[in-house]
Image (cartoon, rainbow over all chains, first blue to last red; front, side, top):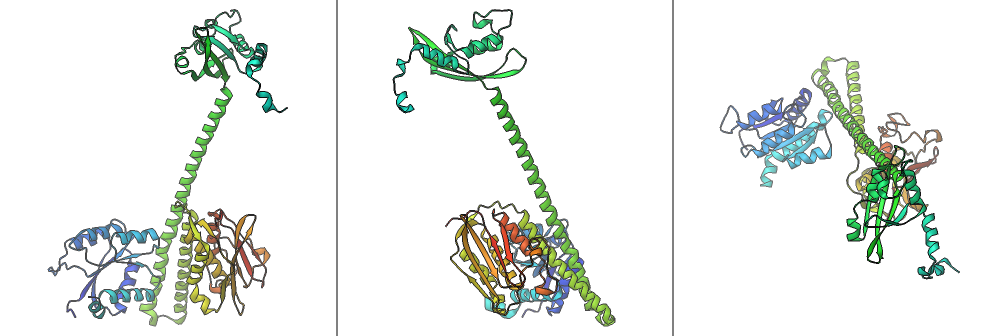
Length: 146
Length: 381
């Protein structure tokens, strides 16, 4: 097991949605660091200069990205991430309150790794975070899948 | 003797005087002229036209005596007809009164008088035709403009409804979340009554979220002008998969859902039709207090149309409520009974059926179950 704590990036302009997700992550007992950006522009500015050899600006291991934000929205940010070889491998989960099929399809086309409809209530969010943690980070699963 | 046989008699046996009669009784002006514009023959209508066109004080002797407009038509160059045997044109002229009339001129090369080519000229006053045509064009342009406007306002309405519903979701979720945070962080500090109220806020915001969700879905259904072409849909397969989707619930309630007879293939939108059957079957399960819940799906033919039906042995709908069940957010029962639907299912069903050019109606009485009947437009077997 790696000694380094995982770094989770949350790009979300809504405080309560961020708060709920942060609480869900804490509840699952996922031992990780969380950095939050309130806008797509800030997130991209950080990511483009991030580097795993740089303690000041390390690359996140996973990104939760809100779809609807002022300025650069989730789609723009996702596109920029997946176009940049330096960061394109970081898994991205799209958070949204839209369940429009066209939105979902568009995100997958742009390279999203998963799509999470924003749930009502913490309990539902915990289940989602747990399954993401199990899929992307749990050692047992990863070892089996390699 | 039949008319057919009569007309078999060679035309050339008809005396020349009869031709004069035929020509004179022909309502449009006709003349035969040479290329030198020498009129060899004209019928009564032609003579009338000339007479009405010649200024009173002058006497007609040659085409050049006529008003300029008309002279140009009658006296015009005959190159085309002489070369190709036929010529047609429409010209606007002013006859007698100041009103603009349109004359259609047809020139036909009809033979040679000794060595001289003869031109048959038939004039038609097509002013009324032209006016009617213009009117039709005007109308269709106006219609197109109206349609475009309607489509635009429909689109705007759709965008508005969707955006409004979508934007409502965010504050509703916020309400729910903050209520949750209060309980998570301060539960111990709160009196029991306060906790209860906060839980009510949560329950209500949850319910509101479901309603907004339904509204979004209704907007999508109502406004999405189906641009994709209709596909042949195997209704039997669609109903089977709709039943499959509800299998968990059907088993849980040990209900019986049966397809009564072979269902046809029709043109439509498969996913939408599945929604129709899914909604109607679910309704039959939901509003049902029978010990053995039974739902029957079938089809019969009436006036050349396939009429589908979904029949249940549920609680039924009283006569006075039957026209209300298709209204959006119309519920006949309290929120707590019968699984608390939002009252949007049947409104969506109706919309889907309507844009299949079908219609839906029902037959029901309290405690006697309900049968929904509907058509889905043209069918092909």
